[in-house]
Amino acid sequence: MRRALREALGLARSVAIYHRGGRARRAALDRWYGRFLSPGELAFDVGAHVGDRIGAFRRLGARVIAVEPQPGPLRVLRLLFGRDGGVTLVPAAVARAPGAVTLHLNPANPTVSTASTEFLKAAGGAAGWEGQRWSETVTVPATTLDRLIADHGLPAFAKIDVEGFEAEALAGLSATPRALSFEFTTIQRDVARACLDRLAALGYGAFNASLGESLAFAHPAPLDQAAMEAWIDALPAEANSGDVYASLEPGRLS
Image (cartoon, rainbow, N blue to C red):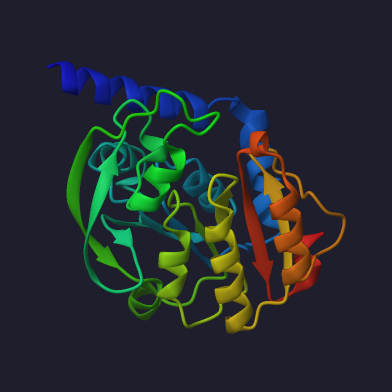
């Protein structure tokens, strides 16, 4: 009973955080992602959590492949989008190879559940991460970005937010969506560097970033890989997290 209550409260907290703001918040998300997606195009939401980005992609007229391994958030997604023919829910993690991974669950704060043991080590004792507890584990199926592309097509945009497992996810990508984003944290800047290395190897040369949930670019024009790495390295720890955006069309990044 206590475990179920903790999970329910954690999910309610996530829904309140990511679906709050009403019409104004939805409009801001739509303007932001409208630079990357047009009606009829395909989007991947990797680490879909409770679906606020799915909602934005659908309002823009895009079809969505939504990947989420956590049982609790999956129940929310099925309630919100289970009858939407434009959304395909994939109950899996994304890794460098197909198979299975161990997911470390944070029932009170499911947005930071992770498949990365290095993320857990980095968060332990870090400022801003006090009180977080990954108290449960579950084994979940793992797919790859390449497998998703083989099954569903090449997305115009892919959002990747998997709590320290971003480099592992990108290691399973050999194609080049027109644009994509990956989350980074200041407790794991090495993961951001590994992601940038992988994207550069795939041919991406233009990057920008958005801190937290600001939905605003930190730079007036795109940066190259070296400049983006230097900017991330110089961020204060309290910046906490953000998303790096890469595009084959630099004009979408300003």
